[in-house]
Length: 195
Image 1 (tube, rainbow, N blue to C red):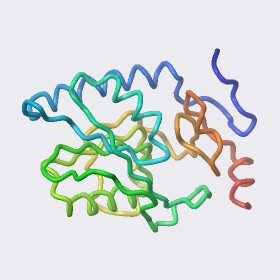
Image 2 (cartoon, rainbow, N blue to C red):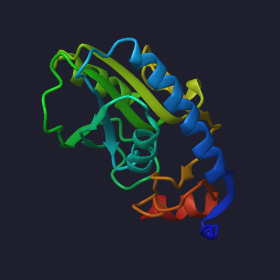
Image 3 (spheres, rainbow, N blue to C red):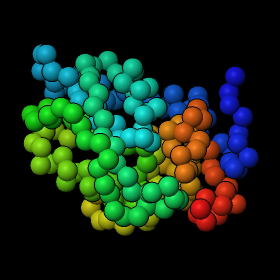
Image 4 (cartoon, rainbow, N blue to C red):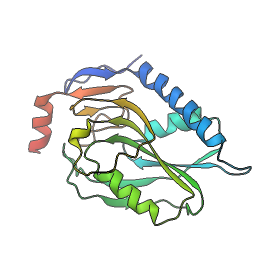
């Protein structure tokens, strides 16, 4: 039984079924790509960015047909609000070295581009053999605040200029548990912005 739509949400934009179908396709594409580059005994290092991509990472990891390990990185740029501050901070870094490894960063959404820019710079200093990005959602490119950071190899869904929650994405810590992606109402956005 699916979780009912909360009052703060106007509509379901992407259903649970659509998310799982798309992740199956992404997993197939990613597996096919890395089957050609991974050597015997190597595994792809998945780095989900917490907290928003934890559901995405769990589902994707299980559907990959290649060896993979998971290491987490926690960042903050929203500080509980509805807009990025533009200042990205590491709250928890990865535990293991990515030196000479194939790394795939998993992100919930690309919006302003600040986080993607930060991650590209952060990991370039760690000398991975390869570094790619896979994002569940991407907002329109006109929302980008940073030029030149659209280097996402795999994208789940393109969304319009909407504030969305569910499937790991939150507003003030709420709604991550929803198995679908829903649009937050303007009333709810105003309410959370004032807090």
